[in-house]
Image (cartoon, rainbow, N blue to C red):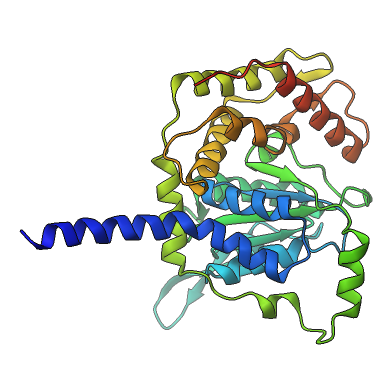
Length: 328
């Protein structure tokens, strides 16, 4: 009988340690990188929620470095794919090669088989190759020559696209944009941060300053923990109201899908888990509505990609202000 309290205490201690990991990971990234704090926080919450992240910004602001730093912090495998117009689906998924010694086809995994996949300039790939990402992102598996191969767990895609170089690019289809749980932009660093990078005495790479925070198994446990966070009926109604607001807003041709509502709920759960709560409050959804919903909108006048996304963000902000926040 004496072992039961000890066992219960051990379980509680493990749960407390797991719930603290996302904050520890974010702090490790803050200490090593010059990325905006809100971008780092969003990346960690998206990972904890089990989603994928789309970073849309100009080159040279640290998008790829952030993804590599996160992989190092969780001790996960990482692969980087530079998308080009001539890339084929097999370049991502891998191929089956005939083995004369074994007298059979042997599967050789492609770069999609990693815990964190950096899809650099994803909008430079042709539509056929982009479609190969859909199964990987949504089903966590790839199909090659009639065989299904599961991807590592946890699995996290960080895709980047350059909004200013449109020559030789293929806009991401709405179905693929909908697979990204969140979308954000870095923006340029402030003057002090940029000067600090220039005057750094050791000239070390930012990744050299990122320490391992946890094992990959612990990172997977964080995702399991977020799924157990409760969403009350009033909060669920609030999330649905935000999504439905996009479907009847002036200037929006197609609003957020039901998948967007599920994504916002998952992100709200992750934010609550990181804050040490086992329940979601309306602020969890309110604070994350823009990065979760804006990139999913199809506007009547699409216009320039970067301008369209900014208008979509402004629309979501208007909807958030106009939607009544429940008390519970």
